[in-house]
Image 1 (cartoon, rainbow, N blue to C red):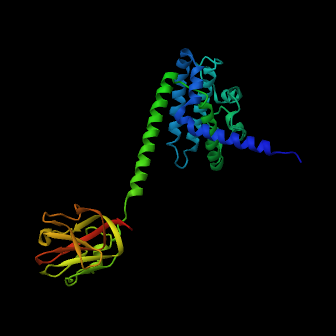
Image 2: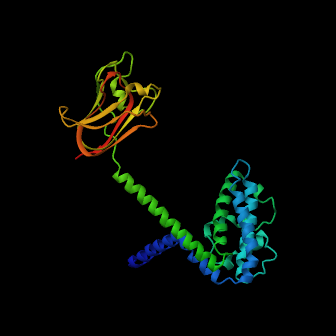
Image 3: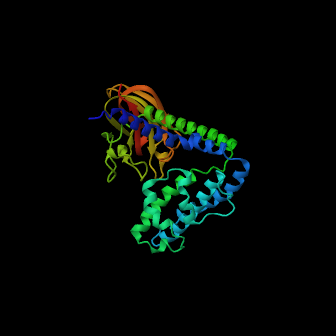
Length: 334
């Protein structure tokens, strides 16, 4: 049995190299630069209008995706193909580019540009040899769908043989695209870092106690149900020093606490508000007091410098009631 390992390795390397080229070409534009180097100013002037005309027809076909629009799209694709081949042959000096080829003429000369996609070429043979403008109308829906896909591939290949830009313009675009890619990478990296160092809301869904519960008001657990606004999530009776307390279930290193007030008004009636944390519910550390009004949309945010706590308490140190929408605690396990 012959040893095919060398052929397999070569094929794998070829596929990897080809894939890398396809991925990098839109940024590095090496293929485009190579074509531009062999196209002088006179040829570039000849092919530029042909290239624009082909591209405008390609763009127009993308708008024709409705039922019954395949025939019109195929007609435009056939025109785009003929214009692209004419431009490619003109760039090689094989045509003057003044008179575009017909569809059948362009199809007959396609091989002069190199090895076109073979499968697509075989499936389009009958359609492309026919210059009748109604050739696409005679296809059934399935044939039309297949023809459009095959034409897209062949046209893209033919367009890759044409380069109306100057070498200088290509190099400028390479710089712009490289910078854009670099900036995009930096943005993604920054987002990943921010995501990595962000901390979860460890209070979400945790049990809540309150000094009392106003009749027909939500259960105190409404303060950690994730809903900011919608009236209030917890509401005590009018009493001396009302409070609401969250049990995080374990000790966390607290980074930030956000208190969202009720969203239906009356916020000043629960002020000034005091925020405290504790590890054991016996010794409390005051984080701050808020006398200025805040809302569910503009919460009270307190930065906590990695202090250890399992319990978080909000209270009002006077006779009144305490109502809140939500309490969020951000931190991590020690």
